[in-house]
Amino acid sequence: MKLTFLLLILLASLATTTTCGGSDTAEGPLPDTRLTNALSRVPLNFSDKPLEFHDYAASLAHEGLNVERWEDYLSLDTSERDRFYEGVAIHPELRYITRNLYDVLALDIFAARLGIWSWTPGLDSQTFVLLQGNFGVANITKNLLTLEYKKDDHNGIPYYWLDEDFTQDVQHAPSRPLRSFGLFANRTVLLDDWLIGAPATDISNNLIDVQQQKDLSLLESEPHFQIAKAIGDGLIGGAFVTPSWVIDTWNTVNRSPESWLDKYLEGSDQWVPLSPYTLVLLGYRVSDGTEETVIAFYYPDPKSAKDDASKLESRWDSFYYDAQGSGEVETAVTKSCGSLVTATIELEDSSVLLGKCKVIRSIKRDLEIEGPTLWSWLYETRKLEFLVPDLRELRK
Image (cartoon, rainbow, N blue to C red; front, side, top):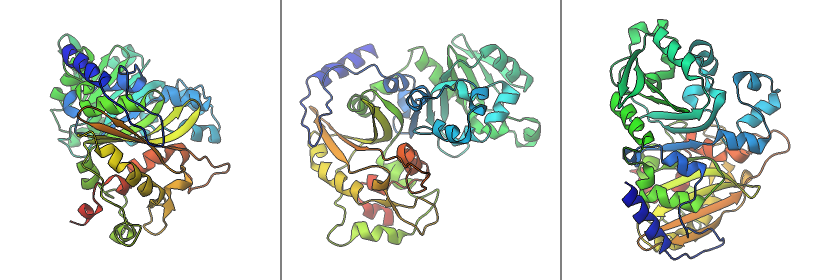
């Protein structure tokens, strides 16, 4: 693994960089950032799965909030509680059971400083959660055993399991208050300051191996590696997805009429297809005090990023989404984030296209202005048409 990692750094150092409308580059070694730390914790075999990144500590620092425990959050007034979710958000699978986890398991979600998720629906999904924070291992492990978890170990690291792999005991669900936590809680590991949750033993074991540097991580994935270099420091929240995932899950949450695609497929302003890409990151970054929505594409050839720069700018500046989930009202993304500025990074055998725009915050609460949360709203509601290489694929 170390040899592969060094070879990747050597190849990156030989790369040449071309910029367009910006000065972001991928020169030099991989930066030691919260994002690279997160990627080093995720198994390589999740390279084609959706992956969410949330830097709670950075978000709280940027918002000027001191929240380390549940009681701290309760002490905030309503407007400050809203600010807690600017840029990042507690994952929906936890958001509605935060109090339950605290009362029953002594798991304080507000103690989390960093969160990494891979979440796909289905009982047999390749799903996991990684949370970093000071959670209080002794109390949690005691409560897990009280909740009928069994103790086992992998390579000397203890873990706790409830049901068989990829299963949920529906019959006994009423007596198990963590059942609403779903498959995330089927395997639970507490390793150093990390809490690991997974639906099956092979996934939790794989995660343990990566934490101990006994297996390959996403830093060995060239697309993730190069996008992390292009993003640099300051990413507060973001999601890595593949183009096939964007197409397969288009509008699965709040479906908009297909007629909404007409304006992008017809007429003089129709969207030109993007070049084939492997991976894209959509997120929110604070760079030198400036809040930005960022988009980063990885292409498996050195020329595509430059070819797609103006295409992406045009798509973003003309993109409307269903902000209210009604299928009736269209809102421009440029209400929450200005025009997109792109930078292209040309490598020896690949390229990265980085787009960024300044976040717009509303003085008063305006439902049409998402501000720092624009990326997460678009991701969670699957309003991602602007990431589809060829929109005609949505009509197959």
